[in-house]
Image (tube, rainbow, N blue to C red; front, side, top):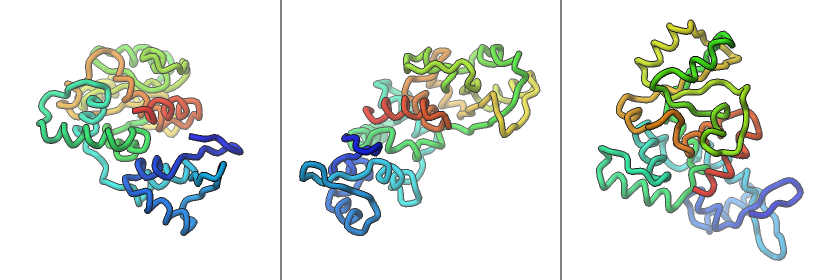
Length: 228
């Protein structure tokens, strides 16, 4: 990747890998002015943001993954072995990980949970994050996973099952809010069994950070997910 005039540029080969197409297709998109490009030292380079926008937009290749497949992909990327996933599916997901990084696939991984933005009394936030059995994620807990981001005032984000979510909502009288300070990320029971420990896997937290409005969170997410 090359930085120039505040923009980031990548090679046509890297752009092709991110979009799952041939380099020839990238050159065609450049010729049609559908992806911006420039020559640097005689080399044609394309704007990374244009490539990422195509990866996320309606033209993105592939349908969104189900929660189960999303988490199987994440755990395989982290070197874990999700139980109950057949060998053929694991082989397909591993091949996909060899072809594309998680940053370029983040739109397809958006269905890994159902997000519920809610509001709690500020005094309840520490207790919600410490609820038994929940798995913490997001900017508030990124430092706990060694992601190099400290954001103690960020919303409390936790992974939990539907039944657990109902109990938390009732216990703390949580209400939907356009200014949430709690985000419940609900996953199916079978997926939740794959999550161990009080903090979510590093790559899962990075994906959650990629959805954050804070540019710092997105920068941290990108630096991690582009390498995976």
